[in-house]
Image (cartoon, rainbow, N blue to C red; front, side, top):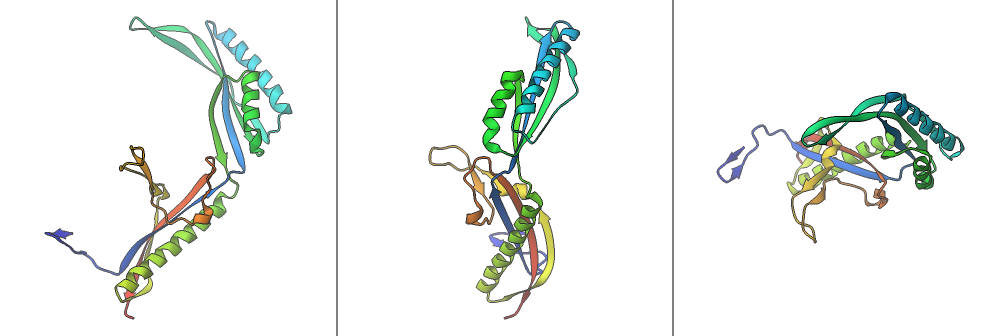
Length: 225
């Protein structure tokens, strides 16, 4: 609580610190999400076009270097267009989704191009994954806890006291580690503020790198030196 120019702690109990870690690791697999979407005035014709496109896509994937692939069930929706402030039906869109999983990431461009050439006219997402996610989350939580302890010891040493036993541990959503900072970069505009106590050797410059974070609040008892 603030009283004038002073800051007081309403319920003093020890030293409370925030610890965090943000690891960046290269992916080991990727998922490509695409679709065959066909428009026609008649539903039956739209279905036929979508099925023909799906057959061509399936034929391509059977020969492609992919780990796994699958097609969704066909769906149909009516399509409209606005003209002269009026919403008018123009036909029906039949759509079949395509999901492709591959572990050879250097083939992504080849697979995407092949899907489009075969008849997939929508590529909605390319998602990257790692099979080590559980292991990396555990490591990030360990590093966050270590960072909190080190921070507490720095504060305690400066205050001429010692860090005692742990009083409280609270898990914190790691999404707060990537926060917009409303300052100005060299060329102006908002920049991203890195809030994590990250290990430099874990950082990756790969734009497809997967971020695995952890954050924790820990309270320690203060002990006399």
